[in-house]
Image (cartoon, rainbow, N blue to C red; front, side, top):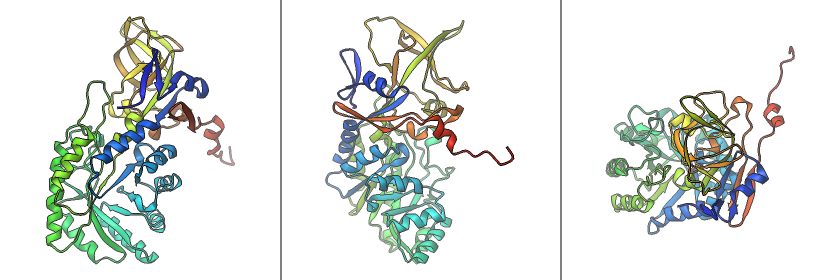
Length: 419
């Protein structure tokens, strides 16, 4: 469910006409719905109302300060994977005791910064990382609360680039090798074992892989308890899929919650979740303007002003986004377009042979379900400026990230003296 709907044949974001926003900020731009973000958080949290839980928004999915702040106001913490994301979470008002530091490549400087902020938990992904974290924590006179991310060798059944729970994955510690690492962690200075962490992938629309992974984690928790290692927290990661295509709806978060609560009904401690896409995905759209239409013997192209540098998912993941006109037309004539951007790459293609209402230069279109892994993955490829982001709340909208200027783009670069 989202709050982007047609009213009087015109697309609205909550109670604001999208065309009004486009006139104010230009295209392309991202638009987020405050009501959708808060609704999705409440729906997710509602399933665990009788459990001790911490819901940490996966900042990598959308790092906008306004988005993080909106979810923090609902009670969310932050799942982060870099010092920059820690700083973003803190700037947005997230309590450090609700920040979990994930990722396989934490540097010494990042560990030091996180320890100085007294974050809630480090999700450790290798023996080398554990040893370095112990060394830095001990030197600072700090204690790092840790969970070890175990790899259960479960295929998430999703795109190979966002599958993270196989033995061939770079993530986590093989669950068969994890007991030895827990025993080592128990002896290291500056380390306090707090939990087990698992995350098998993203955009998972069949809950069977979750069930298989969680059953393995439940059994592993029992093994650790029997060996004398107490585990007060289980970090079950994120990964719930969202509907990118009309009519293809994954299971509801309440079904996920029901499954989790059944599997871990005997676990008395805190359950931690790291949802990203399921909170932010449907809360955002990317709005673009048609520049030209172009036809050859084989195809008709709809050339728009958004490009792969603004939304890379279709090029990078072969991902589908529903693309809809901002203005509905009584003209029922439909055409089949390849929808493409202006970047000098054949890969700058959003859709092939997509049936759309007939459109012309100046018409606006919206990419649905663009609130996650959209703006956060943008670049300045082809020296294109980073696009603005807008948030809507009821009948008001505000700019939350302005369009990059050309001067800003060039200001970081330095010509050498000899030039």
